[in-house]
Image 1 (cartoon, one colour):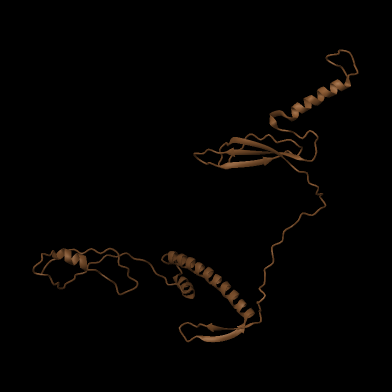
Image 2 (cartoon, one colour):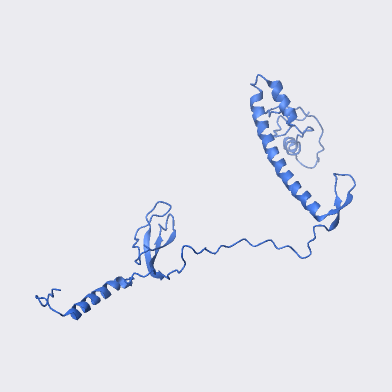
Length: 256
């Protein structure tokens, strides 16, 4: 070993050992972070906190990383999911304790908790219940709990199927109504509509004039505007459920 203070080879190994040790200690404590110079399987991690533009995104992102070799990773830049560059606001350093688990060891797995069956539950219990059949008189039947459970399950499945079929029939109605006028095979479209219970209809806008005559009782001691009285109190209604009354305008009111 060549000593700078002793240009010739010397035997002051203890002096050089002290110098090297001191240099390593200074490296270990740089910036207040103590690095794992012994290279144990402890992982030195770095927890970084980033913030995004407070006026646009205002996100706070925390990132904990390690290179797996006992040194912090040194991440200083991060892009927010919104696409903007984030600002580093803090850094914390820590170590993760070594794990003694080997590859052969199986990880603990959590299994979903089993359904707890009540102590009073008896699938063979006989139950008397009311059977409702439309507007007719109700009936009373007796059956096992297990049978009622299956009836309820099948009823829910049937309701789901009915909802799905209704949606498909509504789609078929729109397709038939749109194609019917220009179709060269209207008979087939009508047959399909009848099989699915679809009424082929179209909406037509109309305007009409109605001549109305009648009488009105007015107080002789009061001044009335006949047009205002008729306009405020006369309305039009329809006796057909297929007709929907929209705007109404009363005009040409006159006294006979």
